[in-house]
Image: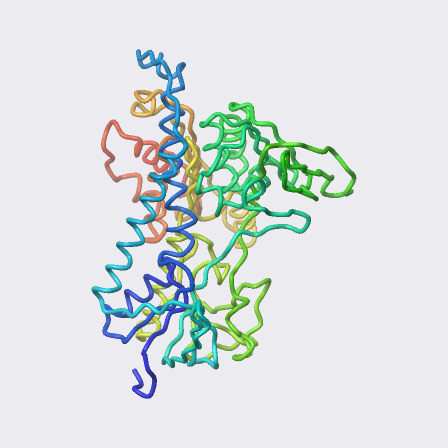
Length: 479
C-alpha cells in the first residue's frame, strides 16, 4: 500500500460489515482504523438481531410453557408461566454488552484504532472525523470503506415519541408492554415483534399497506405461516390500508386509509404503535457529493466488487458494504461484503454471490429462505428456456418433528429440471433457520440435487426434511 497516506484502510461504521472489513484488513497486514459515531456493533448488536433474539428466546419459552395442548400431547401438565419484563430486558442488554465488549477486545488485540465520531468524506482518500465535542481531525487512507448501515424508516404522517409510538430501536429496550399494540408492517420485523408481544399477553393488530400479509414471502410459505403465526394467535389484521396518521398519546390514535383510494377505513385507539415499515440507508452525512457520487433513495451504488460508483464508474479507493448498499440488508451479508471488499483491495478479485445468502425470520416456528421465490424462479425459467422443478417436503412426515409435537412445517425446493441446480428454497417449521444453511451451502457450491440426494443424513433429525426434498427433486429430473 502507498505510504503517502496515514492508513491503508479506513472504515466508516463499526457494524458487522465494517467490523469484518477492519478485522480482515488488519489480519492481512494493512494499517487499519475504524470510525464509529455510536457503539461498536452497529444496528445488529445494539438495536437489531442480537437483542431481538434474546427477547425472542425468552418470550418463546413463555409461549412453550403456556402451550398446554402441545404439552399434553407430550404427557406434560403445566400450570403455565408468567414473564417478568425487566429481567427479560436485562437479559437482552447483557447480551448486547457481552457482544460489544467482545468486538472491542478483538479490534484492540489486532491493533485496529477505533476513532469515536462521525466520519465524512473529503475526496476519495480523505475522511474528516468529528467528535461529539465538535473537534475535527482529518485522516487519509489509500482505501476508504463506507459501512454506515441503516435506520428504521418512518413513513410520513407517523409521529414518534419513542414511548407510545416507536420503532424497533425502542421496542428492543422492552421498557413497557402495551396491553394493545398496533404493528405497522408485516415483514420480518413486524412478525418477530408480533411473536414477542403475543407471547407476553399483549393484544396485537397488524397493519399492512399491501393487499396481503407477509408480502415478501413465498406464497405457499406465507399461507401456512399466516395460518399459524397470525390467525392461530387471534391477531387482528388490516391489509391494503395505510396508517396515514399516527398521533402519540394515551391512547394513540391511528388513522387508517385505503392504500389505493386513500378513503378513510377506520380509526383505532390503541395503547402503543410499533412502526416496522422497513429500513432506510444512513448516507446523508458522508458528503458523497465531494466525490461525485449520487445515491439512489439514499443507497450507495457499487459494482460487483463493492467499489463505489460515480456516473457508472468506480471511484478510486472508495468502497461500500452492508445495508447502505441496499444489496441484501442482513448482518451476515454485510460481514461477507466487508471481507469481499478487502479481498478486492488485496487484489484477489471476486464478486458477491447474493443468491446463496440465506435469510431467517425468527418467529416460533421460524421462516427461512435462500435464493429465488417461486415467482422469480418461474420468470428466470421462462427467460432462459428451462423447465422449473418444485418439490415439497413436510415436517409431519419427519420423526424428530413429530417427537417434538411440532409437525406443522413445510419445505419447498426449487431447481432446474435439466441439470438439477438448486435455485432456491423456503422453509417454515421448527429450526428452519438452521436447516436453510444446508441448502445455501449447496447453492454456493453449485451442487446438483442428484449429488445432494446421495448425502446421508442423521436419523432421526430435522435435516431429513431437506434430504427428502433432495431425493424428490432428483427423481424429478428430466434426464
